[in-house]
Length: 328
Ligand SMILES: *Cc1c(COP(=O)(O)O)cnc(C)c1O
Image (cartoon, rainbow, N blue to C red; front, side, top):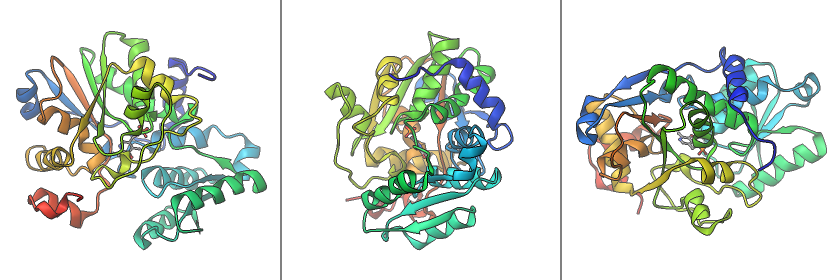
């Protein structure tokens, strides 16, 4: 791993992002506690203004730019929660931001990112072509690239969740965290293992296209094919030149679990009916792992509910049990 990230970096992130990211509630879930045979609490990252935790990492990166970097501006390619987070943190701190999208990006997403104050640049017919344009802006126009997960500031920002978990639940024994590129779980595991080494950290991905879990099995960053999934915010690769998160997850995460599309939809339904929460698929995988009986001996448990940005027409079909809501 390149330059290590420390607990001190995570505390520094917490102070830096306090004006842009909320300290979110940790809500007890008696129904999941009964199922798991322990006390269960839910970390509501759904309550961030952008509807997902990614504001923590993006804000930590953007608020720590030098004056020269602020003038150069930031660029990213994500259409999802990271794109929203970068747009929102950049506009709140007066930094120009460009989000590169392909022609396939739905108009609603383009409008949402523009509404958050970022410039949208539409290029090519795929995410890859959009990425080429983003990297060109970095090379030719000297813009600062904000990687969605493999970046020390982003990891430290997401790690602030770990500090909050221990403050609100000092007896915590197990943390269950959604896993994609590994910035979220990497930061949380760093904070937890530094302050409370006995806490177990469990990562949860979907069965379809879990790049980090396949990479762990292969022993190195690996490409997986992307498949449609309800957990769309967990899709995408970890980068063949991964610098931070692969090693962090390999070294600090105790176990990983994978959940099916039916299990993710059951978890979204459970969260809505029993907890009165709207979750996107990626935000529901921790609950899915518990409901599916894949978590044993967890004891006092926190489940990170990472986001709520789901299309409401799809959400309605899922919570009413419409089988057409599952990807084929
Ligand atoms: C990005 C994201 C994740 C995964 O975070 P990584 O740092 O890529 O592992 C989980 N849930 C939601 C809602 C996300 O947007």
